[in-house]
Length: 94
Image (cartoon, rainbow, N blue to C red; front, side, top):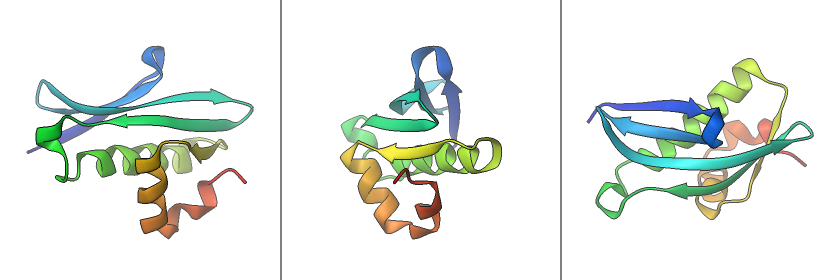
C-alpha cells in the first residue's frame, strides 16, 4: 500500500489515496488562525491500517512547516491520535 495525502482546499478536506483509490479523508474548517479538524472518515476495510493516522500526521506536519495556524481537534479520532503523539502538542489551540 502506497498512501498519498493531498490537500483539497476547495472541498475543505485532506484526502488519502492508494493509487487512484480514495481511502479516507478529514474535513476541516478554518477561521481566526484555527483549523478545526471536524471529521475523519476511513472505509471499514481500511481501518486499523494507519490510514487515518497518516492523514493526521501529514496535516500537522504541513501546518508546522508552512503556517502559524493552530489546530483544534474536534474529531474524536484526531483527539485520540494527538494524545498518543505529544510531539504535536505545540500545534493545539488553547
